[in-house]
Image 1 (cartoon, one colour):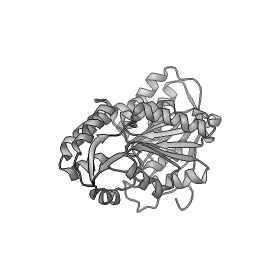
Image 2 (cartoon, one colour; image 1 turned 180 degrees about the vertical axis):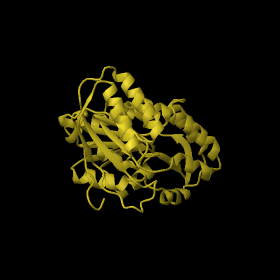
Image 3 (cartoon, one colour; image 1 turned 30 degrees about the horizontal axis):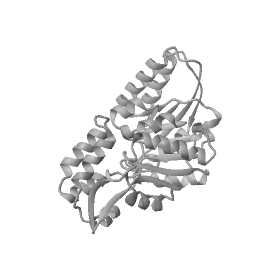
Image 4 (spheres, helix red, strand yellow; image 1 turned 60 degrees about the horizontal axis):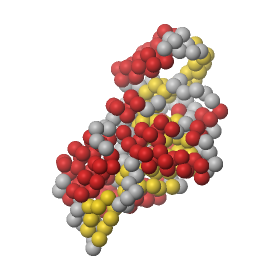
Amino acid sequence: MTLLTRKVTAGQLQAVSSITAKYGLNIDHIDRLSGRMPLDTPADKGKGCIEFSVRGEAADPQALRAEFLSVAQELNVDIAFQEDSLFRRNRRLAVFDMDSTLIEAEVIDELAKAAGVGDQVAAITERAMAGELDFKASFKERMALLKGLDVGVLDAIGASLRLTEGAEVLFAELKRLGYKTAILSGGFTYFAKQVQARLGIDYVFANELEVVDGKVTGVAVEPIVDAQRKADLLRELAQKEGLSLEQTIAVGDGANDLPMLAIAGLGVAFRAKPLVKKSAKHAISTVGLDGVLYLLGQRDRKGL
């Protein structure tokens, strides 16, 4: 069991220990995976992680999970439960959504602002990511609204995209550990290739932005990378790398990421919508993307 938060407090540890005991589980060992933070670290930049080695069978696993979800929200922590199997430290493929996961923005919303239809497209994106709309249909609807957008704005938008907190640390470590990495995105290849270059990612699968005579056509080019396509691509990449799905990690924030999160050995909903957070096996909301390393049992290394 892993507890992640900006700053570990005695109250958080007490709450987790009490719930664990209430459901008939024994804590064998408690270990700190995070390093000591400088005293002047801003409150929103700290990171703390405590790992509990727990033994036993929970009397009611569903109720246990619900109680941990509730206390996590109340105390502003993330609590992840996973079996400490051979696979946990032997995963070798990590795949990521791009928009609002590897980068802070939703690129299609940024394109829409440039096209003068920002509010309209953002509202559709919000509903699609929350699982209220079919992704493929909503993607076609949003693409149609971008018709006529001048291709000249793409470079400026690409240059303005900010990587999510912890992304560079995470990818440097995954590379050191021998992982293959991939972007599986419902966004656009044009921008995914830029993120690939910045983070040293091995594979990119995303949607094509069709341009004719310097203008976006507004046509969604098939095949669209939707929820099912992401899950299929994860399977294909695992097979290509000679890995079982148990040896894979998937990270995303939207409803269209749920199928790939469900089949990965470690599926993580990152700063996700409530429905996605509730549906995924694991969620990280309180720290940066490098919090994924703690779920692999990795300790902070000096200089990171």
